[in-house]
Figure 1 (cartoon, protein in one colour):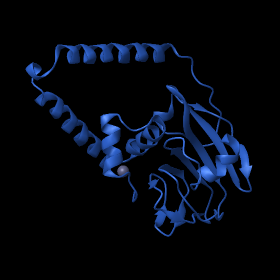
Figure 2 (cartoon, rainbow, N blue to C red; figure 1 turned 45 degrees about the vertical axis):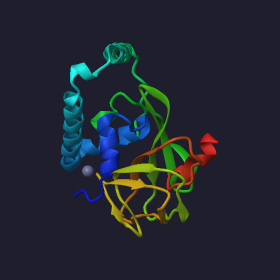
Figure 3 (cartoon, helix red, strand yellow; figure 1 turned 180 degrees about the vertical axis):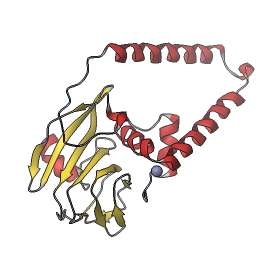
Figure 4 (tube, rainbow, N blue to C red; figure 1 turned 60 degrees about the vertical axis):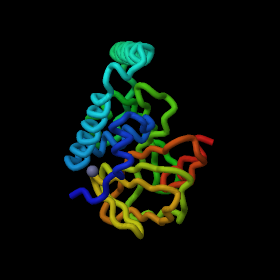
Length: 216
Ligand SMILES: [Zn+2]
């Protein structure tokens, strides 16, 4: 039972392509298992499509059309490059990962602190996206903290709780810098999440804080 979803703003940015690659893959993982968000994204895409449709060809500068056509050619070229790209290395992280991650590289689990391991997720089109898997032992309490930017965390296995509620499999926690919380992984088992950070901000969030020593 999914209780926590991305905001409409995030789903809209997903639909119009303006969400950064890291958060984008987290939303794709969520929407792959959430019919509510998948249909919301379709609605937003339909709105975007009809807005495009409302632009009469006469209103468009010839150069604008050239621009659009050039962009389509570039997109196709990028897709062709992706098609021949060798498969990224994938470590076995002990759980079945969502299908949308099939083309992503998955690093081995690395120790990051007592009871916490992480694995880097590499996106086929963006080597610099801050995406990671995190595995936290049952019952572990994380330091109280605030965020300096958006952090997207999708629960794959297990659960954690904080003052805002409980986050279980399929839930997406979208935390901004207004959020101050002290998450605790529930006692009944380890928690595995996939998380992404937006932008190159200083990392102080739930998971960002843990990986900060690793990425400087
Ligand atoms: Zn959802």
